[in-house]
Amino acid sequence: MALASSQSLNEMDLGAQRERWETFRKRRGLSCEGAAKFLLDTFEYPGLVYHTGGCHCGAVRFAVWAPADLRVVDCSCRLCRKKQHRHFLVPASRFTLLLGAESVVTYRSHAHPALHSFCSRCRVQSFHASVSDPGVYGVTRRCLDKGTFS
Image (tube, rainbow, N blue to C red; front, side, top):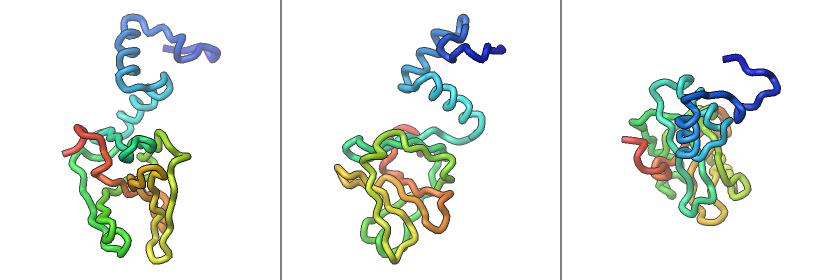
């Protein structure tokens, strides 16, 4: 279906699919653009699951496309051992910070090549980025919402 350049996604004539589109959008709490991105990502990342998660207080929320069967790494660096930080790795292109950029505080240890990000309110570390490879995120499995992983 070709759209006129001035016609917005909200004005699209979806015909009989309009109700399904609106139900899908509302169930996931997405804007029209967000729903379109989600559907496109589903085709771009076949075999992956859309996981959501966040910190304890809910100030920080994220989404990540990863397998349902997550391979968790038990990091052996001194900082992660002390925190018992277990995480799985994903390319940065499959990680999205949904909420709380203003609540994220980042700590960089001189002895550890990672940017440890945590919530400024509840202090939970949901994810971290690698300094040596900014294209990779480590995501804490225990911070994922229930029901999307094995």
